[in-house]
Length: 269
Image (cartoon, rainbow, N blue to C red; front, side, top):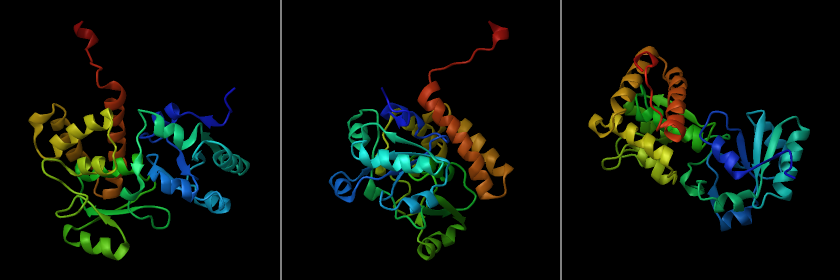
């Protein structure tokens, strides 16, 4: 009989990429992590020996705990969190089960920028349109759900990155930027090894809209129109980002579950 507080690989995989995904806490010991230095998308590492610190840093009322095999470490941490009133599950089979599941993606730990005060910090040009909303969406949903984004004038991006320990993206000559015919969203998919059909479908649309190659995908002009509309609707970049996250949440669910669906006006049947 399954434990009432366990979650399977397939169940967790369906949550990742959605706004409803809980905090995912990786409590694998250092030796195991060195042998297999990969992360479940959106997860962050924390030692099982610092439970008060973990409780203090959790920013959601629920969590999923992961260890190597889904046994004593993750079950113990989940039980501790439940005793604190936090709805915590542990991943059945742990990282071994996740690693062996064909549909589950893993992020190389060394691809994730350094964490400051519990979050990654990113900086880019102000007044975002497409790539500079799509990339924060990808980071928040698949890399660091608590990532902080700074929008500044183009001339100051590099200086702000240096002063605040932030990672610059979508600016000329940055590591996280356009490469060849691809856009920054493509670069992030490559570096984070987030290869899956849904994100590839999104990338085709984002790339075509962001590089003004609307003939490459029939949805590109629509994404541009919505992005321009958002930028005109909001003067504050962070308010625009919040609204844009909802837009890309919807695009992801279309790309994952609804891309074959069509619509017919009932009055014309």
